[in-house]
Image (spheres, rainbow, N blue to C red):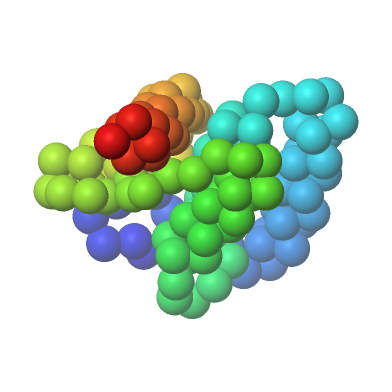
Length: 126
């Protein structure tokens, strides 16, 4: 169980095949030329949905997303900067995992990347 969530993680025997599908889907997105922000959101969203680790799934998912974004020339400062942002983050993941609708999470990640870029542009303009 995940505290405060209706999402029920996979049974342990399903983790390996879902992780294999995760990698196949990621490679297909890369091959198809899917935008890096969409791929980054997918990496975070799906890994945390599969929930392969006993603890730290959210941290590992955010790390994976950030590493991918950095490798593609993007950055993100924080998805959970304050209580309002934290609630929006959890709500978007909940929608993705319980309603099979990843769009709110993709938009959340895209907005966070844009906000990060705006911060960096302001620093450069200073």
